[in-house]
Length: 245
Image (cartoon, rainbow, N blue to C red; front, top):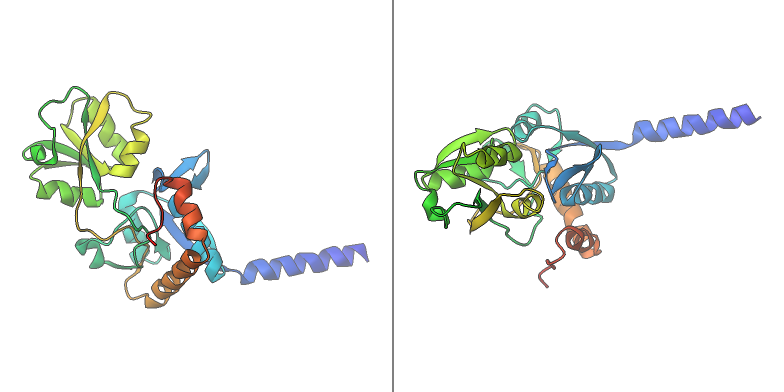
């Protein structure tokens, strides 16, 4: 009898697991507080937000941590269903994929990071003609180009910061919130200015034409805003921010 009960329980668990809806989501866990690693676990604002959206939809999230510039190609090839990685829908990205509505109600801008002893680059306009490091595939590349900078691309923004400290480049342009978090632990560099632009806020990317998933995500997002889940996650990672009411 005991063996029969164990067998039946195993069958129930198997069927439940087999029937569960899975959402394969790509991210790049190098953008604290959006997504980052604590040991082997991916954590952060984007991670908790996506988990809450998926729960609302009845999905189980399967995370795929990969290089930032590999995220959209993986989405286009169908290796993942969605991308959340502090990513905004730039004009270039919109040609390749679709996006949900923005999920942040405030703009952090992009920080201009320089060495502590830098005296020439004191505002963003001083980047004209200077050598600037950016992470490959990020909107900061486009932002820096518009300011007349000579771009050097790195696989990660931490690689760009290391190059800055070694005086291989003049500055780094990176998301301002990310910069503030990482500069707490990196000595010898400082933020000298912040660049604000009209790029829509961070959104969740889906495969081009996948309107069904985009609509589901938007509906679930509205639901977690309405029930207070979103604000709890927001103030956990951005204590100074509140929903506009």
